Image (cartoon, helix red, strand yellow):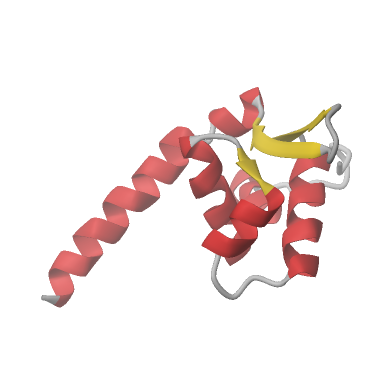
Length: 108
């Protein structure tokens, strides 16, 4: 997690630094619906590599956006979900969804 001093001064740049990659946005989109297991995410996010998914989840966990729960089972089960901070991004994601829908209409 970056310190306050390491964050960009601009709040928009801060948000982009935290969730600005294509894959992070799509991971958040999925986690808004329900908790997901790693392999479920990998299958659903066509084209993402295991390394990028791992790095993205670790980064978002470190930033407090995603929680990782390990269930003491054999074999171990791990689920990723949005944290309270991650849940606070719902309005941002909804606004992006609505804008995308409107933009698509302009192309028709």
